[in-house]
Length: 415
Image (cartoon, rainbow, N blue to C red; front, side):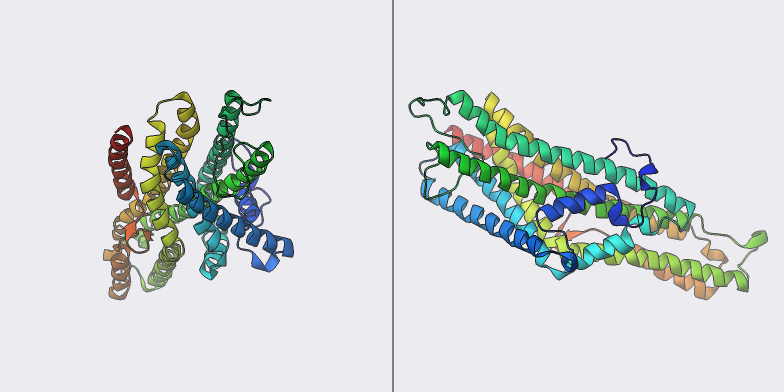
């Protein structure tokens, strides 16, 4: 991938799936078996999809059992670490289940064939300009997300390995009471805290599981953000077309009969464009609504736990939990700000419609403008299960509550 895209990489592209950042998304989702392309799925891909799902369920169940059997023996901070890994596993599981939903396949197909701005770039010069702009934003955002994901995977698995080296757990003979640390703990029928063979088995498993879980969280967030970026581009094109609506020739008071036919066709085209945005936004809410609700609930709980882990202010705790805390809080902030773009652009639409020279139109055409204006005034926010608006206000509320819970838990831990 180019570090700074200039648009030249789009030359020769025949379909939206061939654009570099979408190829990376497609490859990453296929790696975890969640790219919706059942028609071309091989038997190996189907097996891998089911295997990954079984592994995630196995990880979740054994982690819960580990908590159940060791909750009274674990320190407060080890307990917090285990809760965080269980919650991350829940989020990963919820996203792996999307591949079994028909509406997820339909939504992806609509995005690639109808909503992606690659399919609209030839409609006007401004559409092409907006397509290039959104392409650059999407490209850079994809690079940032993949960089964060790889950094998180490396740090989450390398810090326990570093602690094991420092503690002398690999020495022979091993220091007394030295045990192996792990990124994720399970309830297993063999010893993996003092046995080197058991450690290697669990370390390999953790490396694989954390890669799957990180991909589920980061790549799906990226995929959602790409959809919103392109909806934002559609709004820009629609508003531009309305603000540059033609006026009667020779500066006449009213459109001629012949001109009115073109005006009606142009209005209908803009209304269809707006309907495309509304329909796709509605489908996004119905498909990802429960995913986003669970994601917000995850951030509400994990935020205070991660702050609690970092509050030890020990170098190892800061190195291990600091990057994860930053990445997860950044994910929450960026996904909320990205979705806020839709509401912001929708608020500009009524003014753009009103700027149309409706006073020079015939009565029937004015009625069409009025219907368009009324439709544009409906709030356009993606909601999690039709209950919680995905946006900046919800994000601020979660951050505020996480800090409050952190203070309370910190007090309990100190006592």
